[in-house]
Length: 406
Image (cartoon, rainbow, N blue to C red; front, top):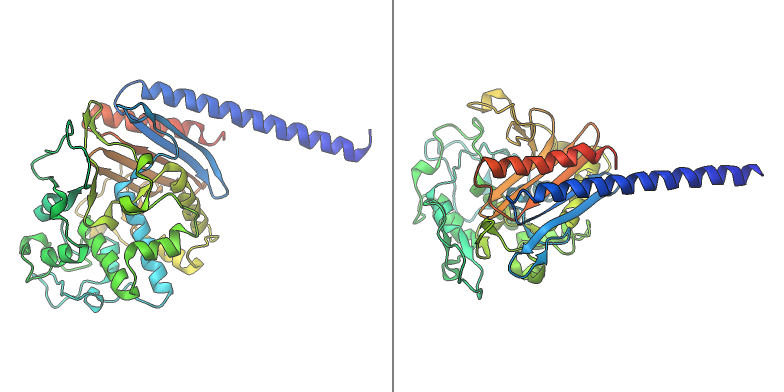
């Protein structure tokens, strides 16, 4: 046997064994995910496991629409809620690269209306404060009661429209522009303005998670660049990453591939969107989102393509310290509020990513900077109790169990 043939045979056998092992691992993982699904807390969900080079595993489980038996697949679309904020951070840094803004600029340099903390009106709120949730802007009653809006032209029979007292899904004819919503809520002359919607601390001093401050950051990107937020995002993020099935509005996606959402496994919710859509209304699939997570891991390793190395270093630089918190949760290894970069969370265990939750939705996306493996979980059913929470983390831990074998 000549040497070339011998070594070729060895390489072929090694490759074949590796492929067989990976296939077997995927089968075992799929089997366990099916077993967890049968516990019955969620109607449908999708997952993905990635490294910086490729997607190692992706799969959907259960139903996107129970009534029609439509399968939930890795290509099923739905809102991923607050994971959306990580994209706003990328967009801010891209706008800074383009010379349109600087993170430490006062926000009022880029707004057609003024936003100041009424307790410290002479202390400017800066863009970095928005991006690190230290702006002192709170999510008040208006955010929960006026921000959620029904999709037009949908059948509302047999759906749940009344949620908790503080959260309301409003008729479509109540829809206004994001600019009007922000101005009416945050500007001193706005019709919904309340002084109590600001902390009594100075801007930059205290972490207070704020959805509406995220939307304000997106509005600043629009004013600084002269482009709508979704146009800017599509040009600089979605197209380069080949996330061609994702978008921020129902009009941007194939609605036939959108999952229905459920308050409980037996209680259907309507289609809805957010007026402040950048803070939690990105619609995507685990397959498309896997492209984004791979790019984040590459960016952390200095190999990213949508931002410069310097911008990614800023994105992943922990911005806060213990003095910026009343208290910090160190117990959950996937608590994204232990520290923060530019709209990207860090847990006490060192995991990097974000979580999300809204009516009918739970989501989680994290990567470990040591092994550079990331995971995604998107669920189409509300987590209403401890059983739901336990099953959510059981799915996540099942991914953990197999990720190093893929």
